[in-house]
Length: 326
Ligand code: G3H
Ligand code: 13P
Ligand code: ZN
Image 1 (cartoon, rainbow, N blue to C red):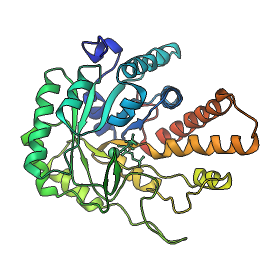
Image 2 (image 1 turned 120 degrees about the vertical axis):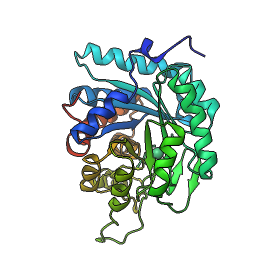
Image 3 (image 1 turned 135 degrees about the horizontal axis):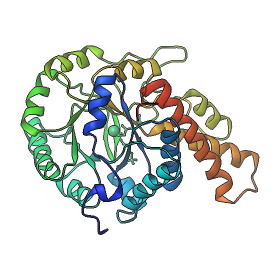
Image 4 (image 1 turned 180 degrees about the horizontal axis):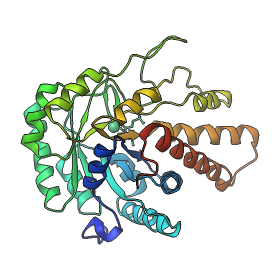
């Protein structure tokens, strides 16, 4: 494993201050998933250009893909790149959907500044005990911890659920008190992936359960809430993918207006993975379709990275409200 004692050596920060400011300012911190260099650069340049704080997040399998030794240095590369761009934005490196203590520990020991312990598929007591174990190890090192209560439909790092189980507001207070977590992911109708709802053409998607969110806010006032599965599945990208040989006809996401409303509440972190994947795929499909002889990766990964920069800037401004808040 890399010889890194603490995330501060990499120029990273935990999420404490970010969430405090987001809560007071009525906006949310973007948490963008990445797996490779082009995604990471797209995210970091987009956030530097829009002066937005950012949480760079990787699932356990994304960490494996990028290589656990290589990954922390990628995050440090992002920090250095931001400096070279003369920008000054807080950057956290976060484990997304960690499902056991050893994984969380290994991330903390190799430079992560924040980890999620997702025990949402376990019974309450087991989830709380697992989360608490991670909190104890993390807090000794000033690493932030995100827990989860309630189950989202869709696939989360190889664990898949058919239906959502909304978060029970009456469990939240006890969970937060028992575990000492710094933030909590809740289930109010979002889901992972590109097929979030089954709707007929022209039909509206069902609204998020803001009543549950409000009830949670009442029970733990001022406590940072996290929204997973929050991609909008931008129709322009879906259209482009389908126009150039793809097949994603029924893809549908969370309307931006719903996410903006959430960002103005206790929701301090909004997770976006699928929208970034779509932006990249749309551009690459178009280039391949129009230039079948192209085989220089820079010629398709470069424009894909540029599209991701524009998408990140757009989201930070229009959806998260985080632009200009660094
Ligand atoms: O919630 C899951 C994220 O979108 C990460 O997905 O496990 O395919 O990296 P992944
Ligand atoms: P999306 O699939 O909606 O982008 O959700 C990503 C996510 O929640 C990562 O944890
Ligand atoms: Zn998630």
